[in-house]
Image 1: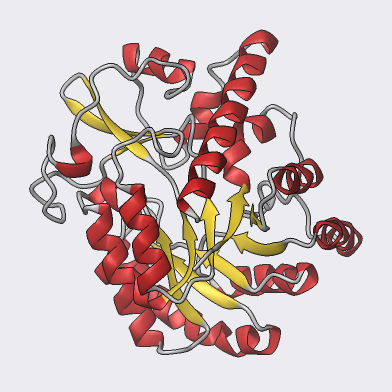
Image 2: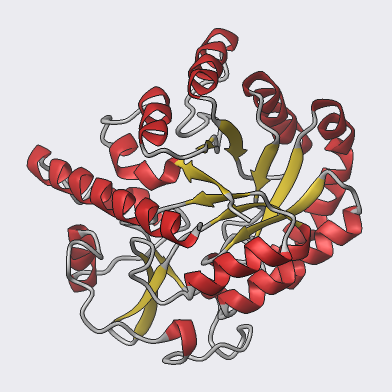
Length: 329
């Protein structure tokens, strides 16, 4: 079938970081692309790209979404019931029926996974009242099976998987394998592309425009279309994103460097593929954290450099949207 297509605000993370994009411009831009919905990142206390949960502000956001006839989903992190309840109230105010959640940014993953099931059970009654599904994401640290174990343990129609087609790579899990496991219980998605580069003797994962990376997106789309209950796919353009592997290859999920999606790209310096500041990082690497993309964005320290990056990011999004539209026929 033909899927509805949404766009995640992270696709414009550079424009947001440089003050050249806000949630209202993003909604309008998504509509200009002829897409069907928005997926809004509302992580942390400051609510990231949404920016506020003031009731008047949320009414303005909803009015803008409604004016363009778009669906809306919310992305958040952390599974504490108080945090989830806050985001569920935002979902209700905006008319969102999906809430993406992930647990880990590098803590005790097994403890966080166990806690997620406990926390989700506490808020399922609110989800039911509001008509909002929790979509639990494989977010760089968790395997597809671990995500499925939580969803199955909660055993509710209001808790499913959030299938991120690239995040499994950080733990040496082939994307197709992860998607196949998570698809039957899918509630939402991030559709993206990655390459693998070497920094010294360390492999690193870099986000690229969709269709220019190592992931077999044609097969990913087919699986989500034919083997999941999804009626929407959310495009997340990770241009300007870089992440390390979070497990050693020996401790990973079986993938091998140089094989499949983990083939090494030798020259990732084309600015249409890799943000220019990433090539600067490759020459002088520093320790990466869970949110290193925000630190890397600061490497553009002049207005002209920021303008260049925003222009390149826009091109990456335009190319990615066109690519996914071609898949969706």
